[in-house]
Image (cartoon, rainbow, N blue to C red):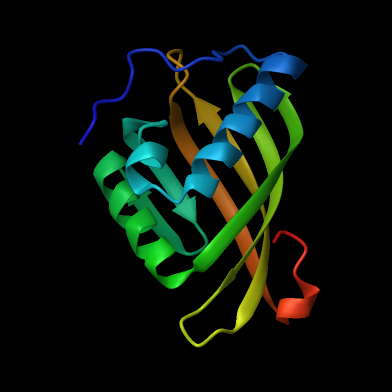
Length: 141
């Protein structure tokens, strides 16, 4: 397990440019499907709401992500900056994945992020809905 960097730029307060860079970094990390890599973007005591799950701390986040990517196969994500101010960023996103039986889904959602001064995310609130799709309907292949 690798320790998180002491500082994770870009740092708040965010500008248009730095908020876009933070969103792109998150998209790139999540598309790696590497729970270790992704978890390092969060404070040790980060608080999450993901759908109907509530998580606290980097260890719980890491375990959640490992389980997620065991179930959500061939996961592919796109994030888009919605708004930003100070140490907060809002994004909209969609991702596509399939289950072990080969059924495809597109998941749509919104996230609100709050960052600590060191650039690590200390709070994430995510609302997500899933829509069944066919393989032919995929947009994020």
